[in-house]
Image 1 (tube, rainbow, N blue to C red):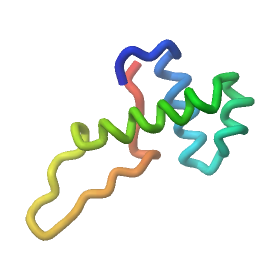
Image 2: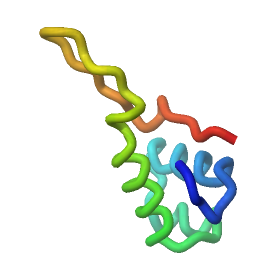
Image 3: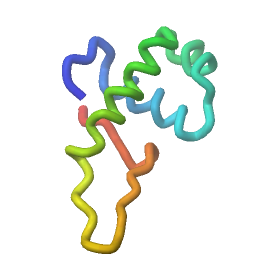
Length: 73
């Protein structure tokens, strides 16, 4: 994800926590970021899934899960 004001490592840790079941408000408290920022990171990541995921072969589908995604440093 580009143009983040927050270090990508923090975004990665926060989103990994969310995929492990941490709530938005708990993530907000732990990482000291607003809940709106956390939700925005999730939305930006979801919007980019198509560019990261290869097309599925005929008759099959590919599921990309949040814990399979890591932010680049």
